[in-house]
Length: 375
Image (cartoon, rainbow, N blue to C red; front, side):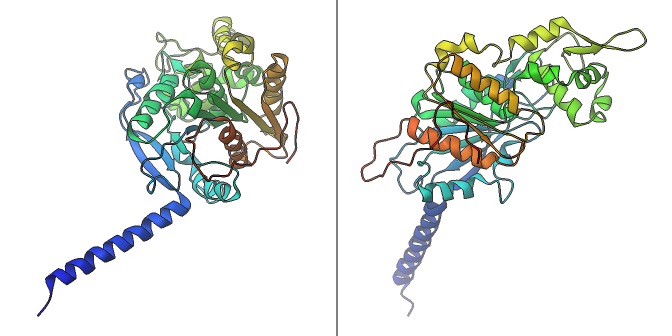
């Protein structure tokens, strides 16, 4: 006769064992989860981008599911133009899950939650700033996403346990958001960030071409560089009275022949007002509150952004702001994960963590203030 009770006990034992094996595997590697978030900050934007179901990718550390009473600091990783939240996990070589597994094994970083929001819009790049045309993308990160993460995950919900870091558009955005919302973040960093004014000055023709577009069909056929210019125009020089793109351009063509490129001073001044590097002095009080600042760029950056990073480095030095600056041999996209690891290593020493017994301190990055190191 079959003993049902024994079968039930055996079944429960097997399920418990398999659950233990699964949790052990997760504990060894951490995990990636994907969620959809409603963003009230994007309501009513003129481009028609939906505030509903914004994708966010979240990395949870190895101990998250096996230590239910433990709380973690959070780092927000901001992607570049044309990418999205899954850009941080899309390839085998540039994969934050695999990288964190290695960095934790090496003792390079401490356990933390990483948050990777989708900040793409109709122009495939929001520039992480509040705009009357595109919506409030700064608030989207610093308010909507932060509130969602703090409400749904075991975070340490204070600025001393939050950092923001990004690449390219996300690098410029991370510095912008870190300073604009210094009450939310205590650490910030950028790899291959830029000065928006220096960049448009070096690319006047692209912005003039963008100024001549009349409809979305022309936009779609114009190409990558013009798409990026349009995203900048809508972010930094919005004009709600100028459909269909609702923005102005800092450089335009003359109306008379022969066509020449001239500065559109009103739009140019809006860019200048929004340039973090050009206006660094005005952020002195907020810079002084930062626990850690990390800046780097490749010496062979194809977009010419090395000089932008050096200007930010020099500006911080002139203000007496302690920071870590690094240059490496490589281009614009070669070493994003290496740069991310260096930033997270610094943040691991700067952010507040829960005090845990029996945990060895992480190693410190050997880059001194103001020193340029090639890797």
